[in-house]
Image 1 (tube, rainbow, N blue to C red):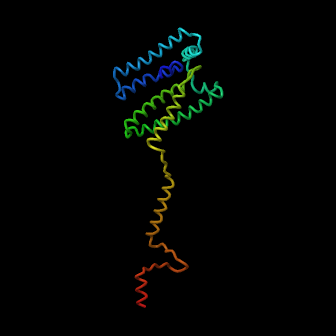
Image 2 (tube, one colour; image 1 turned 30 degrees about the vertical axis):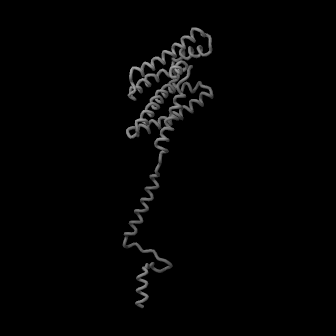
Image 3 (cartoon, one colour; image 1 turned 45 degrees about the horizontal axis):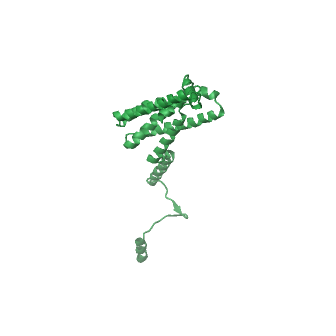
Length: 222
């Protein structure tokens, strides 16, 4: 799938080293794994070569050739924004929102990485690396080709969903409110310990509290 994507979006080639590194990082590196990855790339190249030889004038082959011919030069995203139509500007805005969400998720997973399980570590690491490489392609897209903005969207949505399913929604505490309540409790405690503070009265007379036993003794004594 990554090889087929690389035919139409040449920037996807940058994800191959990440996949091979992840195979080693996840302790799944052996001769069969790397051979299967190499065979997958060679199969895609073989079928692309057959299509180029048999149907050189087809729309798919023409698009692939145009994508690889225009992979350079690269432009900065602000320059692409100035000359982009309205539809692509909407894509840029959505990609910017997804990039902000993805960066927040990357920082959140990084702060909890040592406490997370191996499954969460591996999944967050794969999504974070794919997201960061795709960000480079989005910030410096080809002048006439496509960038990896769908990978940015998918990685951001995946990391956000994984974080919510694993840790739940983040909780925010109102520091100012708690501080004010603490100050009020301290002021009440200080007033209660002040011997010179006048005690409150009820209907103009000092408040007196008698227990049931004391009221009984006063009645019999009288």
